Image: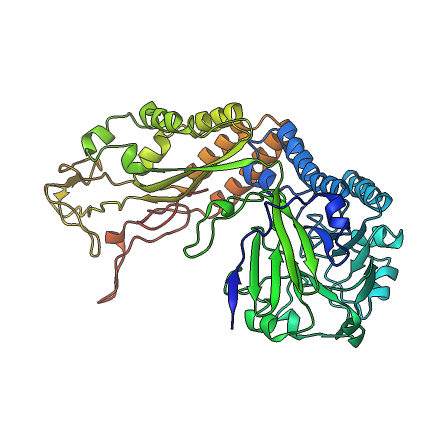
Length: 528
């Protein structure tokens, strides 16, 4: 199987509309996909810290990015405008987004530009049709694009319309173009490209391309249920070009004799754009693609960036916030906030913030529970709200240090012991008074920390309530907190030390959870 990465072609050439129209054998196309109009992905991820006006601003950016693609198409006087799935983020978009798209499609039509679209995972109901005409006639829960198709504003390829793809034949100047569309439905399995045949009428076309919205092997996770394999692309001979959506990063691949162009999303939907995969090129910024296609090959493929929020990631390890001196770490009184770690984070954070930037603060490493509560997360969130578009705090990389469990045998006349339970290592020099539960620690040792889900729930809920200015959201959070506390209280839970449990021979004395109290071990993540 042959595969070749292809860089943007003919970027230095003058691509004005007059020049393009002077080449009758070249078909010009603007390809856009994964616009996700109406998306609240970042809003949900950041809530309740993202104010309503910023959420609205994010919605405006989504619409503006799509309009940049349509404006470019009109300005260049292209022949075709292609939308390869997930135009909307849901099957029931708002009237505002519907009207916005209708206006853009009307402008394209007025400029003489024909529009073709395929459904995506997010904006297509999980309904199969035997024919494309049946999809257009469905009035129960149609895809939002169908209303535009009924008005003649675009041609819509409904997903999974039987075992045979029906091509649309379009004559552009003196060139006959054959176009098919194929999209996968949520929950679909198998290789969608091998499930269909194409009507033989497409063989008359000089240029053939498939509009695809589906995962492609090598660009998606290996465990994806519905995936187009590289071999199936190489083995097919019907389509000279595949114009693809689904993947949010722009790629241009040549697989066998087929050019596969993935436009990429027009806005960021998460921080995956910052991930670097070894062996793959660095992801481009959000945008769309400007294409020049001919019967004997691609003439140009230019990725056009759009106005988008910048993404930044700041990774801070706990070793940068606290020293290894246990005495210094324990110097802050219980319940008090040690401002030193927070100040360190703020100083670093200031270098990444701007009003058009979304910042992910990723905290990693080991720390004690008391150290975790020394972090002033509310202060960090307020700083992010004031100095950047949004701040996401990711503490999933934090681990609680191993607790030191000391037995509390009342048979010991001194009520002191340095012998830990089986499976837990205690450093030399540590003792614990069984009556007062107070002990002495050797240098570098960590105190025993008892974790109560009830206390943690109350602390986390109060933190969220304090962070939002929306009274309805405050009320909902308080109600949820009370309901969860009531459930916890009904358990009548009590905490049992491992030394109090009767263990079978050879059985491990790992710290257990009994009802409402537990001890957290290394490897468990902090609440998010």
